[in-house]
Amino acid sequence: MADFLPQFQEQLGGTLPFEVPTLSPIGAFLNGLVGALLAWVIWSALTYFIGAKLFNGESSFNEMLRLIGFAQAPRLLSVFSFIPCIGGLLSLAGWIWSLVASYLAIKEGLDLDDGKTILTVVISFLVVILVNLFVLGPIFALLSL
Image 1: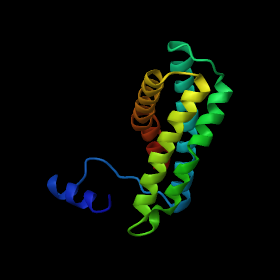
Image 2 (image 1 turned 90 degrees about the vertical axis):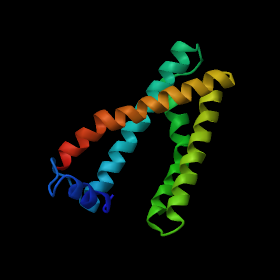
Image 3 (image 1 turned 60 degrees about the vertical axis):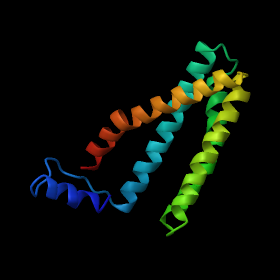
Image 4 (image 1 turned 120 degrees about the horizontal axis):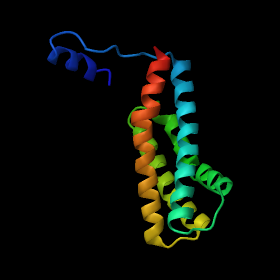
């Protein structure tokens, strides 16, 4: 990202049409922590709504919070993303592991078949990404100015 902004600035003729916020390490940590907690709650709520209400799965919201929370634990490998060469691979491995664990947690927690589980995971995951990009991202960017 650090190399991208100067190149982007050169293409625009020397100035950016917006200000790029910079966060202190503590601000970045808090931003990531709050963002992860909100994403967990939003994904759990969406998973519960889609799986239980649309596909007639049997679960409670509290159970989905617990299952999705445990399934997201492998994402802690992202803590090592600062390590050259292997940090990115560890982060990617944690992300994939977490997605597989989430699939299994949703399948077992909601008692759904494979097709409904895949649809639940994909739909809720995409909605969480959109919420992070278009709702939480701008809010955190405004708060960091």
